Amino acid sequence: MPRFPAALNEQVGYEFGASQQYVAIAVHYDALTLPQLAAHFYRQAVEERNHAMMLVQYLLDADETVRVPGVEAPQTEFADVVEPVRLALEQERRVTAQIGALVQLAREEGDLVGEQFLHWFLQEQREEVSSMSALLAVVERSRDNVMLIEEYLAREAGGDSPLETGAPPAAGGAL
Ligand SMILES: [Fe+2]
Ligand SMILES: [Fe+2]
Image (cartoon, rainbow, N blue to C red):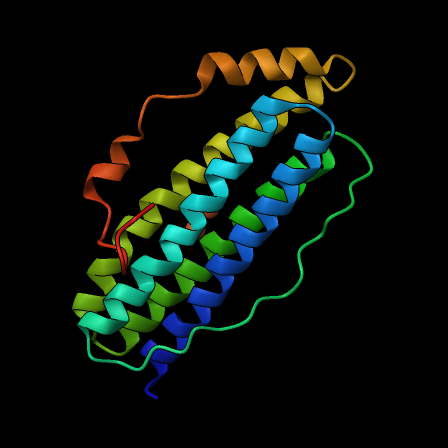
C-alpha cells in the first residue's frame, strides 16, 4: 500500500484507540457518580469513533484498501479525579502531532486532495487541545470539591461546535 493511505489506515487505529480510552475514562467517572464528567467523556468517545469513520470514508472514496485495526487496551485505573483529564490532554496532543505528520506526508507525496481533507482535522485538534486544557485547569483547581467541576460542565456543555457543520462524511454516517 502507498505510504499515505497506509498512514491513514494507521490513524484509523489511533482514533479508535482514543475512543476506547475515552470510554474507559467515562466509565471510571460514571462509577464514581460524577455524571457530568462521565457524559463529557462518553461524548468524546463517540467523536473519536466518528473521526475514525471519516478516515475510513476517505479511504473508500479514494479507492484505497481499508484494514480495520485492533486497538491497544486503554488505561482503566486512575489515582485521582485529575489523572484521566491529564491523560486525555496528552492523548489530544499526541493526535495533533500525528495529524501534523499526516499533513506533511500528503505534502511530500504531492497529494493535495489528501492534504485538504486533513485540514478539518487540524482545526478539530486545535479545538480539542484547547477545551481539554481548559477542563484540566478546572479539574486541578477544584480537585477537592468535585461538585464544582460537575457544575462547570453542566454550565458549559451543550451548544454544537461550529466545526461539526464542516466535518467530512463518516462511513455509515456520523453518530
Ligand atoms: Fe480524533
Ligand atoms: Fe480528539
